[in-house]
Image (cartoon, rainbow, N blue to C red; front, side):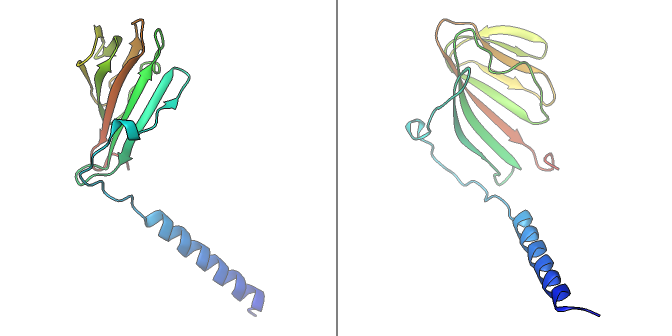
Length: 146
C-alpha cells in the first residue's frame, strides 16, 4: 500500500532530479565580439607573480576560448613543463623568458610568440632581472571536452 510518506518522498525525489537535469543542461552563453580593457581586469597575486583572467568561455566555433595574462617574477617558473590536449599561444608582452617547446629551449623577449601544439610539453621560466609578462591564449576545438 502506498502511504502519504511514499508520495511525498516520490515528489521530492522527482523535483530534485528535475532541478539537477535543468542545471546540467544549461550551457554557458557563447561569447560575442567583445572589448577587454587591460585596466579593468584585476591582477591577482600568485606565488610566482600575478595573473589576469580575461575570459574562459565557448565561442561560436570553439567549445572554449581562454585568455589570461601571467606575470612571472625574476627567476621564477610559471609551472613545470606540462602538456594538454588543447593548443595554446604564448605572446610575450615584456621581460625575458626561457621558453621550452618541441624539445627546444630559447630565450625570448617582448613581441615573441610560442605555439604550444596539442599534447606536446611546454613551459616558461623568467631568466631576466625584471618581471616577465605574457598572454596565454588557449582554445578547445569542438568535441574535445567530452
